[in-house]
Image 1 (tube, rainbow, N blue to C red):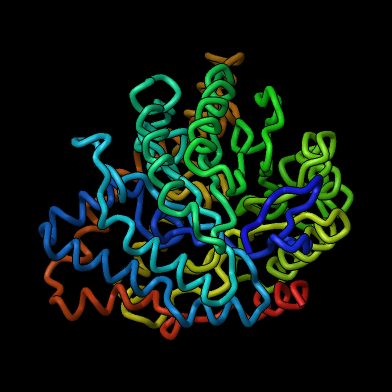
Image 2 (image 1 turned 30 degrees about the vertical axis):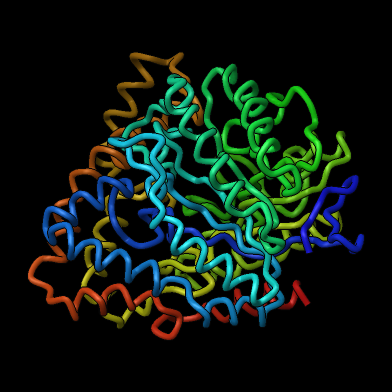
Length: 457
């Protein structure tokens, strides 16, 4: 069943057209603050929890969380919906440590092997996505970046380590027919765009030397929106776009309607998609949306509009025969098909803290950009007055100021409070917190599941 690129399509070994459609497994082997409810970035959070629990007990908790977060029941649910692909984001820290670079951690593959095998048993392909690279390949929390600097592009050492890790990954999975391929860099953010293209040339060559058969899924620069950095169309490659709808963000306005001064309707969605896939259509390569999906608010009227955004996007993808991977499968209630039960142990323990994060706008993905405005408005005005030409990469002055103050400074200041939530818990209580993310303990977002299943069937 190994896939390959044939013109603008993916095909199986017998030539059958395979359109990969499914979900991303965000928050699992690459944890994100808005997905599981912690503040700041994953490694900082783990360090804070370790200081409270100690090495052995924090390892017990996180290992149980990885086990519970995705198991046989999850694979059965997705297979029953008609899903044929799961994009699996992973953090390099599972496979290599900064204090022992180039030395692979064999135990890090235990959970990845388990889920790849489990999905294959349900005839679901895996796309392995390196979501957090050494030094951080982009400016935000989802690359496990504690700063706003993407140091990966500045240091050859980090780049050497990623080539080495991917050579090992490719050697491990080169004979697995249910691995659709490798997504080696999630959402690169190379400020000048000078390093990412040549590095892709190097990485593709290294991967092909080890595994010439599997498909490569390559993200464009600037968070998978800029494909001008590619100097050639590599063989057996899908160039991956990400297609989040402006009106679907936490700060999004009505749909149809205005968001940040821009009118967003179905026509806007289609024009945005066509712009983001221009390179793929010009080169005749397959269309695959690696990430998309609206944020849900709990307000029925607003969420009706968010479901309409999703339905319109799926219809557009159908018209273009584009594959897709919805972000994300499971979380604490923002986007997931399923989410931790509000009355379960984890949300009872951390629900008030998550509400505090929301009030402060400490998660960028869940932020409306209006939180703590009384406190931050003077700073925004100061920057506009004193540095009117300042337009930092990637999204400009307003976003950068919010990132530095709310999503880094405030978020990191909240780490001790989150970690304190584990203090005094018995082993049994820690395991119950982790098991709050098992499917049987979760609430299903039925309307979302039905909408996706209807499209898939």
